[in-house]
Amino acid sequence: MNLQKMFEMQKVLDDRIIKEKGLEGQDLLPNLILALQVELAECANEWRGFKHWSNDREPRTKHPLEVSPNGAFRRGGNPLLEEYVDCLHFILSIGNRLGWNDTDTIDDVVAQHLISEKGFGTAKTFSCLLSIAYGFHFSNVEKRTYISLFTTFFELGS
Image 1 (tube, rainbow, N blue to C red):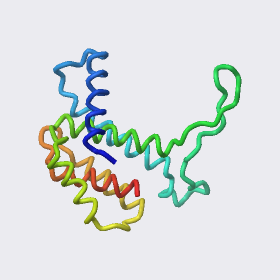
Image 2 (spheres, rainbow, N blue to C red):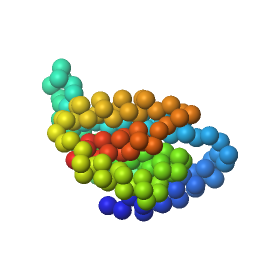
Image 3 (cartoon, one colour):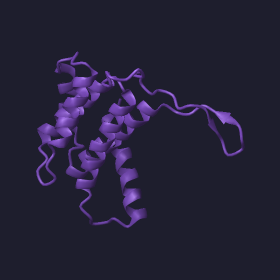
């Protein structure tokens, strides 16, 4: 996985969206943080493992059959994976917006991931991620908090 390339690709996408939507010069960080918080919750909802009260706790890894515009049946995508990737987009966007897409930050994320304690369990990892994301303050997101978020996000993927 090449994080530098991912940051670069995300910047191209973000720049295109900003231009197409006429958002130049606007402070989009609050929107990005809220979007990340929402996507993390949506990802947890697709995982479903925390719903101990439910008879349906299986992760949503397949959409039901869909009908394409030409009337043919087709299998849908993987909602859990889609939500995880959406989270990654916003994590990268936040890093780009704050200038934390540099080699030193990327090295810190990778190093933290390699030494981080594994085995929290998925529910605790989701809770930890949401706590970190909800702790972001729009005017003062700390770099070490961002690195912790990214590292924990990798743990979730594992």
